[in-house]
Length: 220
Image (tube, rainbow, N blue to C red):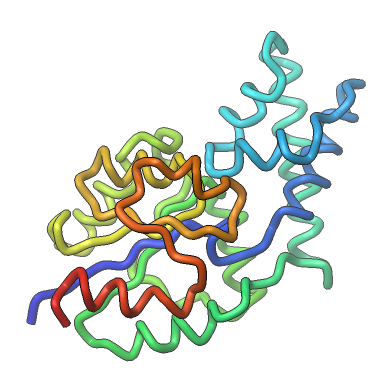
């Protein structure tokens, strides 16, 4: 039996976390006396590691200022994760994961700009703690679009690049997949519009469309 690996991004792909991200980033800017960027600008950096994202949104900030912003963001974001306002799953996500998990030869993984702490909180909030055989987070890798997360996922599972796909909503996800030699599946409902997903091999409009794409890809 040849194992296949379906690797998902989290924010903007599985979870609609835009309210959490915008509120936390707003708190980060206000903590250092700066006006927060517009909502669209904040969402444009989703997928990058937190440190790189804030540095991009606040060019010219000192290291001390950036450190304060990162710490404030983390505190505000985790507060949201432990409240009833935690980010919801997108429609169809749970049913899709159930369907894919039923295949013994299809493994599920994550590659996210979230920290280990943030990802664990999200998975616990939705009862998804043991769904994924590999979970790659920003604590241990360069930021997307560097391919390190996907390379680690392939190494951990023993799946070759041609037996894996990356599912994500941003150009960072698609560029990461391309750099790792992994088939790139973009989703149209996330934080980057479809026209930004230039490196995607295919873009889907509904999570329910993913199994058909996988079957076509792997001849199942």
